[in-house]
Image (cartoon, rainbow over all chains, first blue to last red):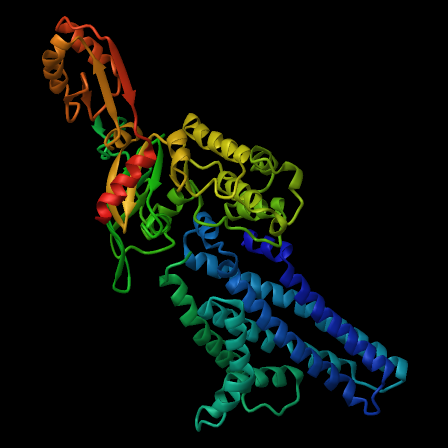
Length: 238
Length: 324
């Protein structure tokens, strides 16, 4: 795992992705500061919406990148001569993905919450600070799940472009179509990961309880992860 | 107890039960219906530098990938220190290998030093454990340690690939076109690096199209074409098998008949008299055996000329013969 952490530290994409997320967090805060909303509830919803979109996109990009880095660089030979057990390599990559997303998410969410509350206090708005924190923090678990989905599609595609295209198509398009299928509609990836967010945010409008929604989100992630993982275990590499 | 090395060309011996560093045993690799390696069998003896030669598409790189567990064999085996991918002990065996297959495996956005750090961390080492700056110095990149390797020239990337292959102090080195893109000075440096490997107990399998490099570096040669093994042997054996090798012995005219008989007895290929000289199509490893054999019959030389074929002659003949 040490080598995977070093790649994240030394290569550009994770740094740029992190910078973009933090920049978005700062921009949201500045936006709320410069253009204070009239409705106090908008501080939480605006911050939550912005973080949800930003973190989801960043998580997919980061997930696909970490899965496809060795394909793109032609570096499987050096990775697998140091650690020929492909399961171990993939688990290390997945662990670094989860750690990275959690770390970045905590910083970004913390920044957003802090700036949002600062903007509200400057505008003299009466906001429930706990509510802002819960709503913004709730965006993190679905984003991590989206990162795992990106990782899975990255492994399956074997290329950054292909992985991102597949993952975006699934998360933003296909998942919407799946909601139209009777029986499955209530249990799509988007529905259950949205329920996780809603439950943590404490909106009380989720279709499923937190545990059920979380378990099905994990199951969806595993289902999307499995084909690419198996392909890598069994396939020929360069 | 010692047993002969499985390789017919190896003069070395291997202790009983001790595996060869690298071994191909009836290896077959197919992509769909296309067979790219067809029952390939040869071994790389310990401490040897073996040149793996073949035209484009011969299956050399594929054989190396199967050896390192990057690709799976369709049939047969490829072993590193007696272990093949998926077997217990393969991890420990393959971690003793330093390899470059085709282009050097580099993270182009990272610096030379960072690339090496990622590599040594993958072995569970720290940069303090591995002499990363020493390796960069050895390949002539010490002054570019902090530059992104994506900005390196082709030759510098090749040097960087070598640094990656050598940084874990491997006992087996597998190099695919190690002098690709290097200037003449760099080529000589790399050649010296490779030739130094057996002196520190390492074994090397080198795949290259530069036949002059093979002649300068390798002890043994394996020739492949269309996935099949065409010839293997010591460098001298392979070269001496080519047409174009000629030993011409000048003796007194009345001694030509006896000299011809003596040389035929030495198994020197086709022996005949041409323009008052006895010529052979094979050259003995040590031409003094000819002098001694003739002296034994009371014949003294008036002249002896040796014309050697090059590895290029031998390679083209072997590969051309297979194509025909």
